[in-house]
Image (cartoon, rainbow, N blue to C red; front, side):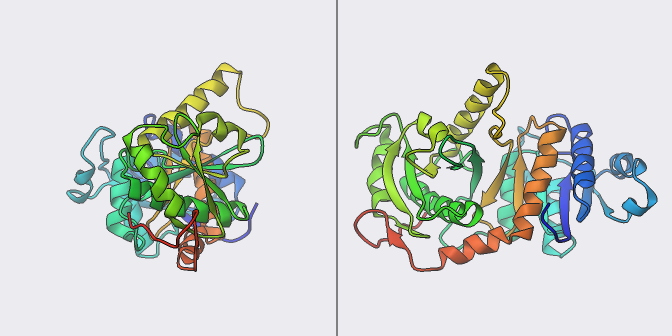
Length: 325
């Protein structure tokens, strides 16, 4: 367990099975990490269910921010600005210094909107990306976007390649990350209109950490990890792929001992630590999401990635051209 006190704002009402699984997951994370402090954002009576099972000494590690409203999973993300709700309040808690990071299994669109409005976007980032790390035979593979932005222009995919390369270097210590664009074949010209247009853009994109663009990759490359350390795609395709891998592991009797696909993802491109859990998350998934948020804060991952993006970069293949998203 990494040392260092960390305060995580947890959206108690986010997720298909909230608040029960969120409470159970928060309790699991709390008991596993003696330096963890929780800010429970939601109805006071829900927070009381967690606090009631703790001893007097542990109760000092829990704070409650009473909020009753939640943005519906199928609701308009713009509703985030029209009322005080759990995810908006959690983001505000980080802004005012009450918490260090946010965890929610609620509506992804609302969470991303709240983070963008509250924390602001990094320079050059129009659409933040959700990034997940998948276990692969040859080492971890960073996949993005997995649901932050369902549609993407070529320039957005190019910018996400920058984010993914920096994340792989900072989080996993990958030297000179290999970056690939997910498509239906590896030959130039394969894929739909967006992929065909994005391929040459990524080839010219300046990348951090000595990263290089290796071209088009296919779905099995995500599981093998032998061609790319970072795989870039749009949020729709990335989310479908991630859940397809989850289903494959379920059919095979469960993930390997090295771990399965994560059910929590880091939001990259905003000036704050935000973890989005799977909407169908169970208590163990929520606990993992809280542990991920704690890891991000303790390792100062978000500011480290942001700082790396400000350093001189290398081109994907030929020129030193930065493509704004």
